[in-house]
Length: 285
Ligand SMILES: C[S@@+](CC[C@H](N)C(=O)[O-])C[C@H]1O[C@@H](n2cnc3c(N)ncnc32)[C@H](O)[C@@H]1O
View 1 (cartoon, rainbow, N blue to C red):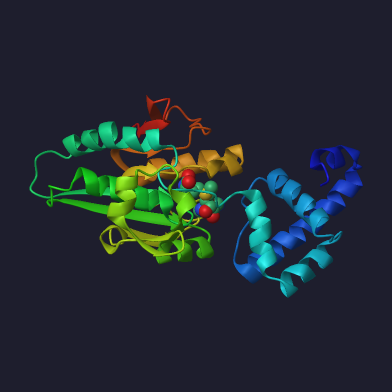
View 2: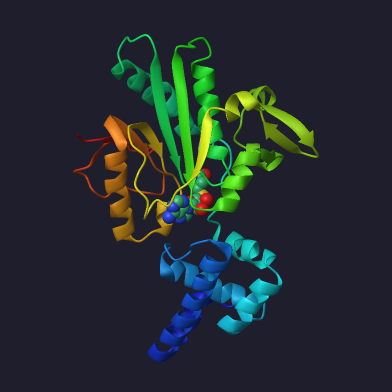
């Protein structure tokens, strides 16, 4: 496989520009033909993987690669897999979910007071194929098993329609459960066929999936907790700043934001740190 950074440094400026134009053509083709917008990801990141993929499938030009995508549309999934942008699993970083359940949820419920009915609203932003929102639903179901007066609403969004279709289907390979307690797997999933499990309807009905672009669409509003994990690493610093402003608008008073361990909230005026280890933040009013 070509070492992309080496090739980068060998290129002259005009060569680089030509290559970038070719790559842009491919991204536009993918956007218009497959409705998958890869143009919001950091260019260097996408280009590096595109260069490497085109080398592996022996397509030296944009037109050759576009022809390949037309003849063999499965190529798109293979390319996207090389970006690892859809990678996820149930209870990814289980300690974060544990802290959410033990510390954050009780704080949210306390702040809601003693009313008859209470609603907790969670937004799983960039939910991929649904493992994150279903994990949250399972956790909340476990926590509120004997509290029917507490209503749970989870809105799960992603820009990728294929990922959302997989989420709606709710069938998962056993490898997706590597951080899942066996008791929860048995309780909330039904084995369907060879090492595959389907989410049960009592969990499924707590989650509503919706197509949504984090960078261009308006944020959801009046949210108690936003999970947005393992997506902003692919965005530029400006895009991340925009996203934090949107999340600030989307959260209700004192709402929480949970990001991935490798990610950081830059703007200290918008959010205070609640748990730096688990990357949990709280909205500053
Ligand atoms: C690695 S997955 C993260 C899944 C889950 N949050 C987790 O941490 O396991 C990243 C997801 O971000 C989605 N994504 C990328 N750009 C997006 C955008 N601009 N708006 C919404 N979702 C986006 C991708 O489609 C992908 O499903």
